[in-house]
Amino acid sequence: MSPVTFNVGIVGCGPRGAFINMSSLIVALAEEGRINEIHKHGNYFEVTFHTFEKKPDEHRATGGAFATNCHGVINTSIAGPNDVNIPNLDKIGDEHKNLVDSATNLQGLVAKHVGKNYDSLMSEYQRVNTAAAANLQYATRDDGTVDTAISCVTRGTQGTVMQYQFDHVMKNGKKAVPFMEHVFHYETEVVSYDITD
Image (tube, rainbow, N blue to C red):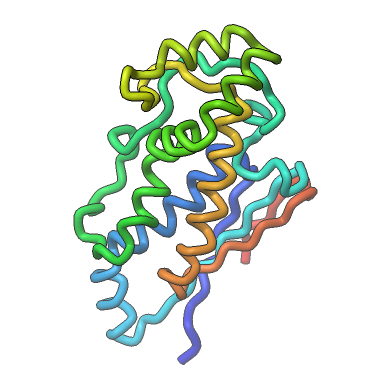
């Protein structure tokens, strides 16, 4: 018997579309036991996510709000693991811990990125947006780490990390969840759809 294929359409690959794609992999890992039971009973299925994005792939995962060349300051905290509500994360095996952390802890990824690039980021911020430099300075703890629970980076810096996050999760998630495929259609505008088939 041929597997049943479910095709799922997602319009947009900005922050929300990227999050939906990444979360689909994490949910599949969290529900791996149930999915394996379904597959064992002869009900094998595959899921293909088709994501349509008007912009080129250089803008993946960032949308307009977090364009990598944006120097605007983010005036809120960055999403961390407590902001992600995916059931059964505790059921995911340790071999996928890095993947889960990457998908659910943007705050931690930004902190690592800033830690590795602090001097160059501060220099750039002082040159292009002194408010961003002041925020980064204020968010810097005495030990040199950055508190990402408060405003600390520009939208462009967060966008750079969001692209890294998306690329990392999609590449490694593909290996971990073989029954799921993600197809991205960049520079494609959805003008209508037909769900009769």
